[in-house]
Amino acid sequence: MGGNGSQLLEQCLLIRRAEEKIVDVYASDLIQSPVHLSIGQEAAAVGLCAALRTTDPLFSTYRSHAYFLAKGGSLHEFFAELMGRATGCCGGKGGSMHLADPSVGFMGTSAIVASSLSNAAGVAWAKKADSVDDVVVAVIGDGALEEGVYHEVLNFASLHNLPLILVVEDNGWAVHSSVGARQAFQMEEHARAYGVGTYRLGPALDPRVIAEQFAGIVEATRNDRAPRWVHLEVFRVKEHVGPGDDFHAGYRNKDDCQRWLDQEWSSLEWSGRHVAEERVSAEIAESFTRAASDPFPDRSSLFIDVVG
Image (cartoon, rainbow, N blue to C red; front, top):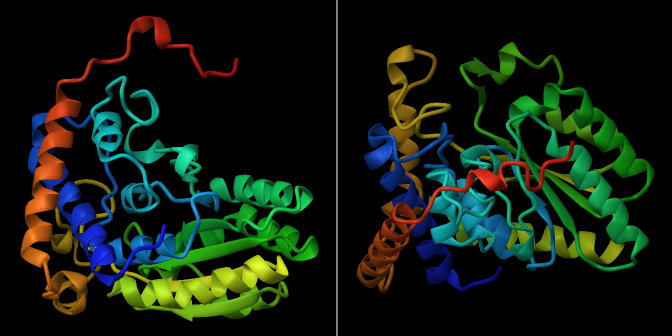
């Protein structure tokens, strides 16, 4: 999507404020689905998407708000989808965990862990067959590495030399379980065993840094059409699902969260930040108010886009 440094920071700001709006209204039941918030992980999404073209397809996890907006998805359609309105990006049928907008290259998400990987590999196969130089990006969480389809896709992408970049957002947790309690393998060494190039980025504190790092990986993939694997260190500020905090559960440390917030993009002052705050606030207010007044889907649309 591109953008200069200030634009990337403003994108992070928009995503943060949009999700804070969700937190503020969640108890009102305006939001019609569970939410997996991206607060703390905005720099990863904005940085990665800045290195991509609109025509580069991106598949995300169900923690997808930041990627949907960073890839160019409409803020109004985002809010409308979360409210179950007919004007949402999926007609109000998908909700938070199933956002999609192929017109900007955001190919969709699923509540099933790692399920988008096979779709991403199929699209990468098609891009190769069509001899176009688009790259396909699939973002997964560290918990997805324990699913069988992850191993199958790594093997298939390497075997057939597909232009697929697999990005592992590693926040250290699958719900409440640490990586060490779940994985007997070292994830980078395991990926390298499939013959793909591996990279480590992050911590994803500043979208400008991530954009610069990821741009080189994208360009290399665009040139040689070979798959790559990227480890990206991120931090989830909110609970696994929902608008609240979960430090009372005792599985992670509140001080670690504060250290992240003290270092990330949100702690920065940049030229024009005050103006950016005003602009973002106005955009969120307009989009949210408009979405809240939009109609719900008509009953006649129930079986549209449903394969039976």
